[in-house]
Length: 137
Image (cartoon, rainbow, N blue to C red; front, side, top):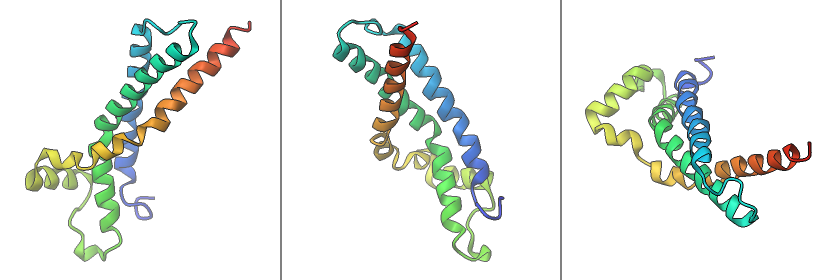
């Protein structure tokens, strides 16, 4: 599989911090949300969306260095192996931090944060749907 998909290892590893922060922080923020059970649908959904959006953005930042390494490994796989800059995941992390600085791992993370709106909406819709079906018992 590694030969077919350069960067598979870092992709799998990068999911762990993303999902951990995404769901863990959303659950934590939801528990602290004073409007979680508000009768006003707009206020309840808006406050849930704020929790979800915050969670999605922070999860994106937590996992973005893994995305950067994955992309670089994938981009070099189009070239002949003799022209590859990185030997693997650890080598890629090391070279980026040594040559460009740690901040290079987060290049493009701001634009990536804009993509989190959909992920936040999924959390809110799931929460609202389960609340509707859970209240019918």
